[in-house]
Image (cartoon, rainbow, N blue to C red; front, side, top):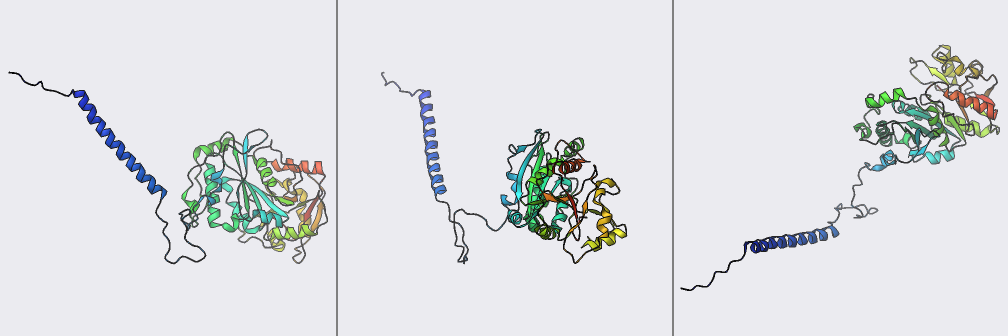
Length: 392
């Protein structure tokens, strides 16, 4: 009995055909999906519009955005610093960033006023800047030293000022110094940066290892002073430490004084500076009030108890003897003739004086070296203004 031989498909060929069919189907599905996705991306849904849009603000879709908040990067300018850049000091120990944050009125104020207040600070004392700005209406150039994670706190303080103290922020130009050994690092800013009810820069926010590093390394005061001074754009500079608060209306008084004083490019005008007792509730409004506090020993010349020669050559006794002079304009009380080697006055002058010597680090006699060079090289006459121009 004969029969037709049975034809069988080899197993490996059958499996290939099955696998080919699955791949084909998957590829077709992916092609269709990609085509649909591209069509959707090229034609996004229209932006939602208000039922009755203002006539001056027609709806637009270029681009769709939420314009109801101020949470963009504009309130965090320091986040845009490229930490790989900046300029080095002479020893390549510190990197400096000019104009890390600038208020909208800083340039205009610098063009209109004769005096810029320059100051410097570490992060833990930066809140003192608010007291300065309360009394000083002119431009303020401030240099801040930050190491490691302190940079995020500086960012937070800047954001807080931008949001909560705009009248202060708009007059400030802020510059940053960071050390080579512990450069600043960007990090997450704390929540108080966006909370106007919060107190800025609360204590104990700096990391322990950064605090330990700061204890072992001196504070570069003169680097910061030079940075703040040289970024002032006015004809004159009033350089102070961040804990020196100017008198109320001092910026305006100095403007009037310098507008009428005889031209003297090499003159420096010493500002009598006092320390107020903690029992003094209100800042003295004028020289008469300051003299009253002085008679009660509630106001004493700056550093008299710590180091009397710091301000001794200014001759505070002679300045006080000239009286309150409330009706008089700011004027020169007397010439400072007895220069002392350890003299460290705060003064207003053209910024043609020699820079602060950046080889001196830490605290103590860092201003003294600059002042000695200023008098020795430029032979600057030292003049003590009277009337309401004083610091406290």
